[in-house]
Each structure stands twice: as C-alpha cells, then as structure tokens.
Length: 436
Ligand code: AMP
Ligand code: GLY
Image 1 (cartoon, rainbow, N blue to C red):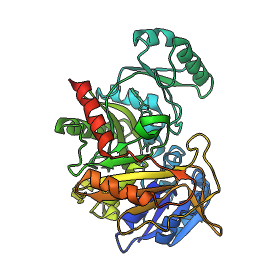
Image 2: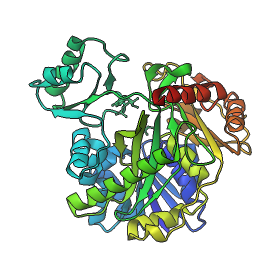
Image 3: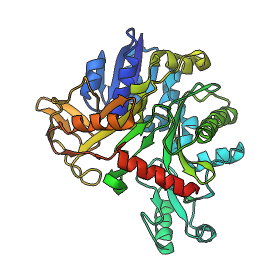
C-alpha cells in the first residue's frame, strides 16, 4: 500500500513516522531537500519543487499511490489536491477553493459571518485605502493588520509590538493594498493562544489534543516572530490555562467551519482544520485558520498518536472517519526546535551540525530544514531539528528534551524555556489576570 507524502520539514518527518507505524505502508516522498529522517522511512524520495503541480503530478503518475498526504500550505494553494483528484489520487489535504480557509484571511472571516459562526474578532476587509482611517478610529487603534494571502507568518503586524502610531498603520496598509492588494484590519485581543487541530472528512470530525506553540525567537517571549520555536501539550489534552468549556467551544467552531465549507462549495473538506485560538475574558476567539497540520504542533501530535494514521487517512478520504479510532496518549509532550544562529532574520546556512550524541531512546528526533550531503548534515537556514519527549509530567518531559537538545553540536540555538515551569506558570497567571 503506497502513500505519497509531499514536503520535507519536521512536520512531514513526523507524519511519515506515524504513517510508517502501519507495517504495510510504503512511503514515497516528493521533497525539496534530502531530509535524513524521511529517507530512512521512505522507499523513495524525489527531489524537486513541491510547489510545482506538474512535477508532483508526474511523480504521482509514476508511483500510483493509494493516496497523497499534502504537508505544507503552498501546494494546497496551488490546487495540488484538485490536480491529483483528476488522476484519481485522493488527498489528505483540501482542494484549492476549500484551502482558502487558510490562504485568504478575508475569505475565512466572511465565511464565518455568512454561516453565523461568531468566532472572529471585529474586522473589516479592504482592497483600497478608502475607509481604513475611519475603521482604525472606530477600533481606537486597538488593531492588528493582516495582509490577505499567505505570508509565512511574517506579514501580520500587531499594534504595540510592530507599530505604534496611526500614521505607521496607514503607511503599512497602503503598502499592502498597493502590493498584493487586500488587507484585513482586525481588533486586537489579549489572552493565551493555543492550537486546536481536527481530522476532517467533510461530514465527521475527530479532534486532536490542544497544543501551545511559541512564536517568539527568544526566551521569555522576546525577539522577532518565527515559524514556531517549540510547543507543548498536556496529559488531559487541554491547556493549563483553559477550562473544559474553552476546549469544547474551540472543537465546536472547527466542526461548524468544516460543515460551512461543505455547504458553501458542495464538496467535503478532507484533511486537517487547524484553528488558531485565543482565550479571552469570556471564552475563546479565533485568530487564524490553517488547512494543514501545524509545525511544530505536528511533532507533538504525531508522537502522541496511538491509533493508525493510515486508517485515519482512509477515514478522511472515504468519509467514514467517525468509524475510525483516533486515540492519543494521555501524556504531556514537549517539542523544542534547534534553529540556526541568527534565525529568523539572518540565519547561518550551509554549516554542518552533528546530532549523533542525542539519545534517541529518550527523545524522538525530527529533521527539518537540513540537507544530508557528502559533507554531512547541513543547515539550510530555517528551523533545523525538532526534539520531542513524552512524559506523565510536563516539566519532566521538558527536562528530558533540554538535556538531549544541548547535545547537538554546531551553530544552533533553542529556547530553553518552552514547557518549563516558570514560563508555564507565568502564562497561567497572565490568563487569570485576563479573566479576573
Ligand atoms: P497569524 O499569522 O495570523 O497567525 O498571526 C500571527 C500572530 O499575530 C498570532 O500568533 C498572534 O500572536 C498575533 N495576532 C494575530 N491576530 C491577532 C489578534 N486579533 N489579536 C491579537 N493578536 C493577534
Ligand atoms: N505553528 C504555526 C503554524 O504551523 O502555522
């Protein structure tokens, strides 16, 4: 039984590892670099441009897999799932129109309004500068500015963090509408963020444990935003700053959004819905949707997953996901990324790292932006290696990861505080203040 995996980050390494726990799975990977973890698991790895639909489709014709697993968002935006469907290869990953839930922030917000799901903060879409000043004044400068399309997490600007004055806000809005064309202006919310991801077959949904990502580059949540420096989850699959109602609300929002997508387009959303939520004073609100597994969150989720991901994927594709077992270990998980020195702004590249001293009986290692070459394992400039531990206790898992990640040799750094007691308690206290 053949599965074609698209992508070669740590997220895809984690997906590959989970799929391969089914002994019948033969994995083929279309990748942009030689991820050593995926090489070990796959029958074949084809190097090319995962964003070129033609290249991937050519490879898929050769392999004739039972299904494709599309890891990153960019191929979804290109309509890869649509093109594969034409040659009768179903995908875990939505078709282009449905992937707009991630690829267009304006679309996502309007969909929720249309289907009466009041989860986003107050917002307005703009395609010219007209009316922007008035809306900024209406929100009293308590604003977040979001270019409409995919920006790799770098286009969003939050008042106080990235700009201060109305003029700065207007200048950025002008730059965006004159460039890619559209911008969303949205009310700024305060509270702890968390990710709640769900497997979807279009009609049925099965939820994953909540996870908290850490976006800032440096300890104590300082420095520039990144793709995510690491993430953690709890044995009860909630977060230490949430109550059961919060989780249920987030799950219900994902369910309603899956159904709304089906209703609007007359075709089922098959893949992952990733709700990026924020816990506010009186409940939870949405910040973002993604149409794929999160990175780093996929490393927590795939390590915790006890059920067969191949069977879950078949459920997604065949529309009987409700009949499949989706079970996660009741353990805490901690994931930390080792990233190149200088990341994210001026990362060192093409320098070797050595991970051989890591004890892989104690932690799971996932390879990301690295390339296995004749000179050894080389840094490619983005997040390099994810290290994950599970334990009954969050702080024990954190210590295990810390002990092992320090064994990596080479020009890399990581955030020591992810999942650690001081930072976690600080977050709990911050949320208590928001809700008091
Ligand atoms: P995004 O790329 O849209 O996920 O946004 C990046 C980051 O900006 C989020 O992780 C939040 O920290 C922040 N952000 C986005 N929208 C809001 C909002 N409405 N209120 C407060 N912070 C936000
Ligand atoms: N962890 C954030 C993302 O995958 O978009």
